[in-house]
Amino acid sequence: MNLTKRQEEILFAIIEEYAELAAPVGSVTLAKLFNVSSATIRSEMSRLEDFGYIAQPHTSAGRVPTDAGYRYYVNALSEHPEVLNQSSPFIVNPERESKTPERSTRVLQIRINSQTRADSAIRGAVDSLVELTGNLGLATIGDQLYISGIARLFTQPEFLDNRRVQAVAELLDNLEPWLREVAPGQPLNIFIGQENPIGKTSQASLIISRFRSPFSDKSYIGILGPTRQNYSRVMSLVRYAGAILEETLALDGKNKE
Image (cartoon, rainbow, N blue to C red; front, top):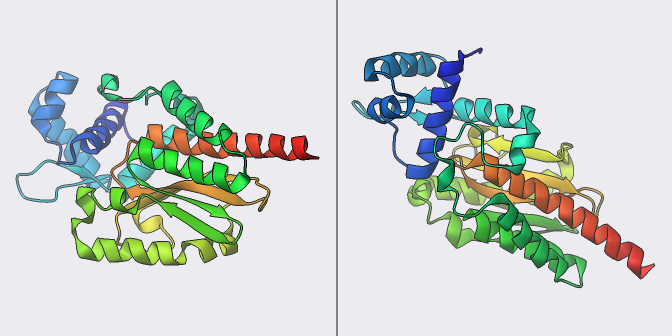
């Protein structure tokens, strides 16, 4: 579905405002951001709703993104990988970033390089992703799945519903064998909401990076969090974590030869 430039900007603004506030985004807020009338915004929001990119959870409420809306947004970021090393160009308030990309990647690099064993380096990278994103972090180490940050994940407002918690648990229970069987082939793999292979009703996004390690040519590291994400930042961090792990572990292997 092709959107006009203004419709695309409004969709991205809704996604980023919702990621920040965890509350439906109304036309008044957007009208101030875009310096147009509320009626103009409502008309464009109606079109976006018809396209299936946003939804109205309650009568007289603002709009929230749908899985399709998030997918459109993530595809836009993926088509311009240079933005994964900086704040999203669509972000309405770039000053909101509490940690600069450079500082965050430096934290990851220090944590990984401070470890003397491959498994410890991978665990350190996962723990850093948890701290930097507030999501659940995970990685494959051999035939095992290392998970950290479950408590962090379940403090998110989306998971106050026990049914969604159960769906996340089902996803995690089946994730390691699924990764081994399917072996997603892209360097960065993103599964949004119902795109997830298991736990489709969890309203969670799985963002994972493939990397080579001493344990496997197809190791994975990533995060599991609500679909309400700062995708630009999280995608950048997960991609960097996989890249620096692959580079560091390869260098360590050569040094030991």
